[in-house]
Each structure stands twice: as structure tokens, then as C-alpha cells.
Length: 248
Image (cartoon, rainbow, N blue to C red; front, side, top):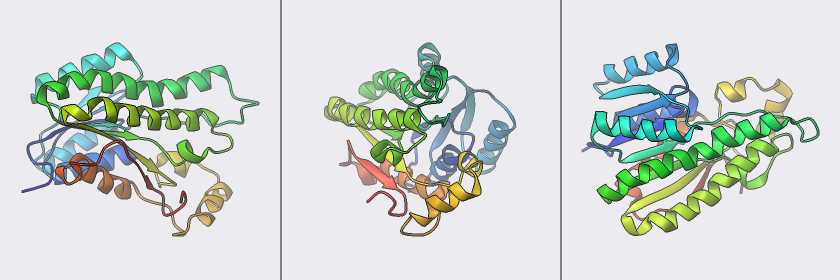
């Protein structure tokens, strides 16, 4: 039996990068896949087609994870379409990097809304479903910079640090209902977001990684499979780094 057979997973920001890799790995382990992005486009259509070619029941949804009402509607739609939500991956995220001296209020507010408020929105909405089921796994995507900080990323670091505190609190609130909540803290992962960085910045990051290479979305997805599955049935409230030793 596959690790996620008969389970339904909802992945926000699922069409690209880490979210896409998680969707593919979950599908390979037998999960039904619901994934959302801000809009339906070529990337969402491509992932839907790929998942269906694997024999996976799936659907893409256009939804703004940073919007409270839209998040409630998304949860209702996924439950109506699939009958349950066993796994929630709060993966939606953006960057608007700048030194605090030059950071605009809008760039601060937008990053906190998309990265942190979205986790509140979706978790609050899904908890009703999972409490009724008396089962569930919530996986929140944090970052090593949420633990250690990073110059020019005060907004991003603050949002990812907030996710860690939120994760630990929700693990304590919902543990008695057999609902687990954990966070993944990726380090330097090769995605569209990191590929836009200047070459000297990339080189400096890699120099500081003990394993001397960036990670891949698949490295993160494999941990997500573990946290989503019953293999981690006694793991909750944890923050697990996927960073090649960068944050030790």
C-alpha cells in the first residue's frame, strides 16, 4: 500500500517549485491532489495534465490564500469535490526583498499577507474539517531565514518566523484531536524564485552550505511525504530544516 493512499491533500501555491514537487510526490504515494494558485494558467493546466496522466484524481483551484473569505470558500469547495481534506500544505509564498531603509510599507504588508496570514486563513478553515474527521496533518512552509534572519529580507524572515510560532501553537491546540502540525524550513532550494538571484549572491549562499550545493524541490517534497503520512504519526510541533547543513 502506498504511503498516502486514500488521502486527500490540499497544497497552496501548488503549481510551481516546491509546491509542484510536493504534489507530484504525494500523487506517486497515492494521494488525491487539490492544489491552488492565485490564477489558473499554463502552469496549473500542465500540472493537472501531468497528475491525471499518473492516474491521480486532481483539481486546480484559483484562490488568493491571503484572503480570509476566499480561503474559507476554497476549503468548502475541496471538501465538496473530494469529500475530505486529510493533508493541508501551506506553501503559498512570495518575496519582496530590500533593506529596511528602502522597504515600502506595501512590500512589508504584502509579504506578511501572502506568507503568514494565508497560513492562519487556511488552517482556521480546515481545522473544522479535520476536527470532525479526528485526523489530519498540517504542513507549513517556513524557511531557515525564519530561524536565523537574513539581511534584506526582514519582511520575509518575519513572516517565516511567525509561521514557526503559529505551527507550535496549533500543534498544542489540536494535538488532542489527532491533528498534527509541523513546519519545514528549506534552505537554498533551486526554484524560479532563487534562479532570479544574481550569480554572486548564489555563489555566496552555496559557499556557506556544508554540502556545497543547493537543494532541490524534491528534497523538500520527500520530507513533506513523511510528515503527511502515518510514518510521522507521533511527530507534531516540529520545525525540520532541509538546508544541507546551512542552519546547524
